Image (cartoon, rainbow over all chains, first blue to last red; front, side, top):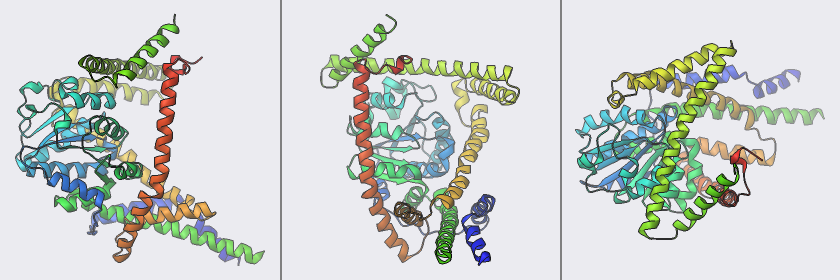
Length: 280
Length: 206
């Protein structure tokens, strides 16, 4: 009897180092022996894909890259997939980075994706850069890009940039997609969509996703890409398969480990309670 | 004067910007743009203040706290190097010293720190998600179902997807919407209190 109680107690109090070790292995093993995970798409991601897919030559898309390196694992893949889809369809892209480390994020992918499709800076896309106070920046860009960004990130005047001719503010873009890891998405909902009525879609981290479903149902955003799963779905739809799809293997294995530990802990809990009742 | 002047400015600016929103004229639009420019200027000066504050606090630690001295020096030296490396616009391009430090130091550091969370979350989930009460069981079930969508289980996954969609768009949405509305009303109430001078904490507390 005592032996059984010990076992149940052990099931409920596994050393955290064991959990850390198994979780580490759950990440390392799929990296060494990769495997494919089938990705089922959801309507909220499909609507973002179909929106970008409907754009054609000469259309403008505004892309907000508002995240830092801490969340790049989740958000970089979707930014890459959207950019590649835009460049492959000859859609003009205007990019801002309203998070402090955002410019580095844009710099680390823009050249790579642009080179793949032969897209040229100032001709096919324009990176406006970073300015503090995202709420004010979003408000100003709804009136005129030049209010906040008289020059682009590289110091060129917007008046001299070909892709910026004939477009005054983001309401003249087909829509805004904000890939975001903080409350900048709220600014886009309140001011970009609320005040200026621009069609808006969001790419957010997994933990943020549940916060933005109300806006999806109310129609304030037309699409939502939640975390790495959202990125993998977008990659699967667009055919630009990179780290999003590959990372689903890690995501799956780590979730299996976490769920297994939760099950073990609850079995231990129920059996120990049963034993306690038996003993009286 | 020390208090009445800021209160007067806040009252004037608050009332003007409130009515500006409902007046669709060029003059009103000019006030709006002008106020936004001011806000960005204030933001830039606040950043300078933040840098100055960081230097002061870190210098104090470097001088007076032997345990923190090393980290304080690393902070100051790192900040100095990044400021110098990123001073010129040309240094912000890919391949520059600034971007190399960003790509090969800052990105791995931030990504590593953030990825440590996965280990803590796993350990916390194991200890917290236990069916002790009805509410805890409900939480456990919901978390289990939502996490299960990450695992491909064929037909079960298809069914689970509908369940997850329902959880996110019905109970989750109802709770979130209530919170959002509550926060919105709270923000409005606080704004009115600040404009009317009832809330004065921002002046340094009364």
